[in-house]
Length: 450
Image (tube, rainbow, N blue to C red; front, top):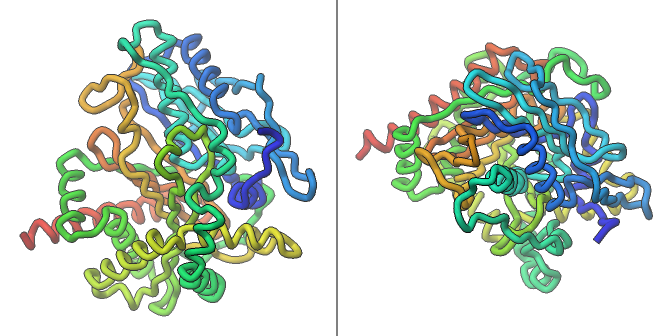
């Protein structure tokens, strides 16, 4: 399989990476109980051995198109008793994929147990891929502990599926038969370049791509309790929309209200949400860790947000058309075309323009099929219990905050990663609070109506 050419989206993540804005996904696993060091290291080694891209580096100059190079014997070094910043995370630093593979692992000692913090380059893995990795790691740890439930085993993976990770559901014949549907998608590309989205707030200083920020990552998290989670899910069902439709609407309303309260911008500004979309199909759950996503962009102006019900229906229609009209592939197809033009992806990755106001990644229910016992809905692996998770999305120039939403053990969780160079802690916390309040209000509106 190797050397394996990078997909257009992987190349975009690779080209867009820079020391000041590392393209890393960070995932924190919060355990009750303390991991056995030798057992965890053995489980980690076994897991990395199953996922080729986690141990690969990039040859950027091969045949004018970068390729993945496999290092079968490479295993990550685990940093035990890692020091943390004021947000409780080990520092995230730039990963040069031309010099080292994409994974770093830290273990943090806390009073009630260990936190495991995974830092993975986004060119290698999206959140769905990370969940595949986490499931394998938890199962491998239970197996290495020696007292695993009867019949527990690692799922057989299919590395050959990595060949179709770029757009697994889009064959050439299917692309031709649905070409007419792409017209609407490429009109979205036109809007992407014509609309000038604004950042959450004006930057106070020039962007320095070359110097890492003094503190990174800087996430803030909120967890809804199980009863709140049930109300939020029930409210979306009562409105006959998806939870994602409702969350997109709520984030638009929260961002607009936050900007208005702080005297930022005008009703004519374009606010843009970037929404990652999983491209995997049935059977691709056996694909090793990979990045198999596209992005859909939703633009609105504050003056369009006054009627929240009308806004919700418009968002519902736009996201439905994106999914069922195959325009979920539009962004990756545009990237594929762009890298064939003179200059390649350089114009897109320049840090001189805001590409999105914020990002919302909704992962849905995570780790639901993991074959491990549960305690109050939480996974039990050997001598530890996975109490919770936090997903931290990467930030780009002018993308001052990125939101990740997921449900684990019956609780809806939100992690917001903010850029301290643009959003001081008080402003960042206020933005997350506004989003949480809006999600609660949307659920309450349905309850009060009923």
